[in-house]
Length: 492
Image (cartoon, rainbow, N blue to C red; front, side):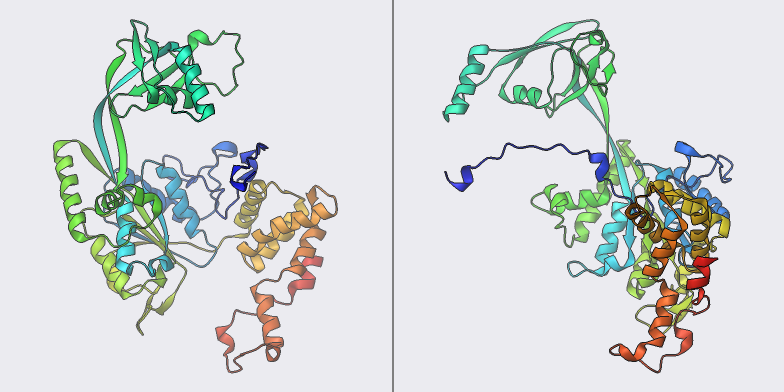
């Protein structure tokens, strides 16, 4: 038998819930503010898991209200603070509170340096991805409960025999009976409609919706009149009421597309397929101008509304003068999203120049930014963050071990302590223990060193490394204070 005729029929079923990965900010569900923009104290499923930074969260809450009221178009916000102070968490919390109806694009500053498109073109793509256009149109639909699906049994048997024997399939015909509470109608079916009904697994008792324009069939659920049937029904089956009135109705359909998607569709021969291929390339300005004019025409006619989104640029100090000049012009445009940037730099040089500026950003752009400052976390905040991360990673930790981990985080860094959570659980599993104890934290603390201890070892054994610079000034390296706590910390 040829290799290309070999078929494998063994199938396996895996639980997709077990395949979900846990990210660094996957526990963030919002800013955690009430209607008065005060930090809420809710816990459990309704908790946002946002801890500390009360002042910065209130400031972001004001930004959230202005975005929802669409009164902050073209404004810019800068999140400035030391590393591990919650800047990215604030931006992602803002995205969670805005919901899926408002476009939110996360961009790292280093992503604009691409070999395929220029820096300004990459930023233009990001800006136009954040500008959504909500288009409202009317379409004719057929909506009702399936009473009966009839397919000619002789024709169906011949079609199956022809498919098995390799003969050309013959045309399949059938009838579909739909009803509402007021009427009942029989429709003739062709081959394509029968295939779509089979693919959707539509049966008698289902409530379906058919788009007359595209022929798309949507299964809305199962009718309440069939809820007492003796058929095997899954617990996830959705029951809906039988539609009322006419079978054929006119319905308003809302589509949300971004300006970038419209640019790609109108700039490539393959149309919307370029969105999936990712090969967008450079888009001519003439096309963008025509699309902007068309969107403006739709807005005047009342067919479309503009939905300004949020563009979040992390590590914005990596941008150069050309990128900053582009953003200066972009935020003054009528079709400008809300720009949120984050940086952990102090007084530093602007990339590509010798000019020193606060946060590595030109002064003319800083003057247009609303700056929100974040402060280092307090010990109590660190303890709560570590507790949330333990819950997220499903790690049971002894209270004494949590206190030790909190002390390590306060003397090293929060990210380092978070990395020790999962490694400590692996060490506890090796001991056949379900709870992480202090000895597991101590073992992982000695196995994995932090930046301060790594710097101390580097200075001690720098002669053994290749290409070491002996004239490095001490103030250019991380502070070595607290480096000698590797024994006293874990034993205290």
